[in-house]
Image (cartoon, rainbow, N blue to C red; front, side, top):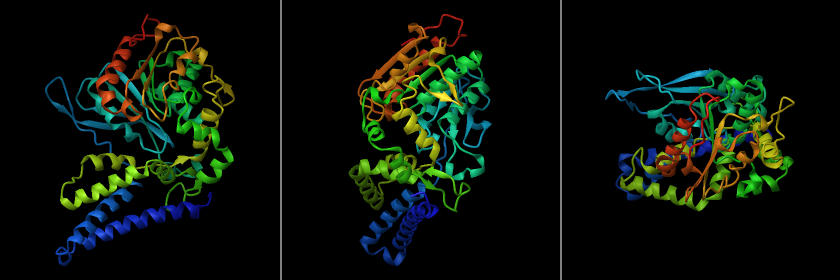
Length: 418
C-alpha cells in the first residue's frame, strides 16, 4: 500500500468518476436529448456525481457571514492568519470595526480527516459574543517532505505555541480528537510557563480514556495491530501534489471507511438527491449539499500523526495513565492546579462515548473540585454536542457561563459554574 502508484490510482478513480459525472451532465443537457425523459435523469445523476467527487479534493470555504453589532450595523468578518506553520496555522475571525470582545476563545479543531471548517457552525455561534481563534490544520498532501514529521508530540507543541502567542487571558475549547493533546499542552505549560496557561479549558467529546466506555472506534483500535495499520492504511503522496513522497493516511481512504459503515444511508441520500435534482426540487445550498459538501471534503493526515495517535492515545492510553511524554519529558497532569476544566459529552455519542472525556477530571488530582465541571447532554450524538441543536440551545450557554465564571486571573477564586 505504501507506494505512490497506489495513491495515484485512488486519485485516478476519483477523477474518473468526477469526469463521468461531468460527461453525463453535458450529454443530458444537449437540446436534442431533452425530448427523452431519461436524459433528465442522466443529467441529474451527472450533476450529483460530479459535485460529490469534486468536493473530495476541495477545501471548503468558511463562508462566515457578517455579524450584527450592538451599534445596529452588520460587521464584515475577516479571517486573519495569526501564526503560520507548516502543518497548521492559527487563524482569527476578526469582526471588522467592532470593539474587541473581552472573551477570547481558542477552538482546537480535530485533525481527523476533515478540515477545520467542520467547526463552521461552532464559530458562527460564538462570534457574536467572543473573539474566536481556530487551529487550521493543513492537508498533508500539500506539505513538502522537507518540512519533516508531525506526530502527537509535534501537535502538542503546536498547541503550546499557539496558547503562548495568545496569552493567558484565553479560554480553550477542544473538540473531539484533540481533547487529550490539548490537556497535555495545558499541563506542559503548567510546568514550563504557568503564566501562559489559559483561564479555562473545555473538552468536548474527546477520548481522554478510550477504555472508559467502548465504541466501534475503540474496539477497532484494540483489535488491529500497528503493523496491520501501517500496511493497509498508509500511502505515499503521488506526483500531483507538493507533498509527493510523504507518508500519509489518505483522506479518500478514510472517507471510504466512514461511508462503508453506513453505506445504505449514503446510497439512499445520493439516490434521493438525484431524483430531487431531476424534478427541480434541489438547490445549491439545500440540506443534502450543505452536509455533503463538508462531509466529502477530506484531507490527508501525516502518517506519523495517525499511527502515534492510535498507538499512544488509544492502545497505550498514555494520556489516561498520566504517562505521556513530549521530547523525552514527562507531561505531568498533576501540575494543572489553576485552570478550570469542564468536560462535555453526548449521551448517544457513538464515537467518544460518555465517560471517555469525563476521565480527564480524575487525572487532575492537583486541581480543586470547585474548578472542575462536567455535563452529559441527554439524547445528543457526537456532532450535536459541538454544532447541532444541543450545542446551540443547551451546551453553548453552559460553556459561556463557565468561561465567564473563570474569566479572572488564576489567583482569583473563580469557580466551575455548571
